[in-house]
Length: 122
Image 1 (cartoon, helix red, strand yellow):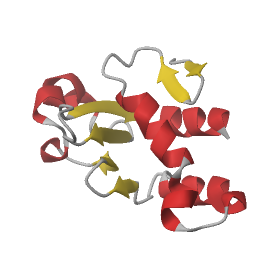
Image 2: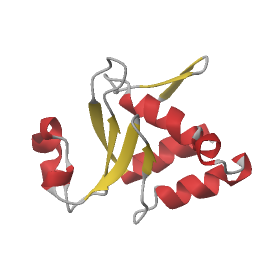
Image 3: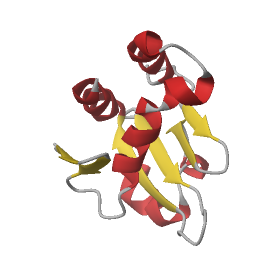
């Protein structure tokens, strides 16, 4: 189980070598500002987005979080690691897109853990 480490405005997560999960939490918690929705609705909005049938989150040109349903949904470098879990577990792909010289990076996280991490931050 991963743990959240707060470092000022930066969110770090254990077992997150590329910082993708921490960035995901930062973007998800900022979703109300990006979408123009009220902060009070943030918990409900995130619960809906990351429910087992949720649509995830897209921050254009920066970040995308979506549920993987088949091997083609997985980032090429994580296919072997996560292929055995497809169909047995609810897997979410969190991807930082290439931006301002930062390389693209992804993490695959089970749905229950995504929801637990979001809940801890709210």
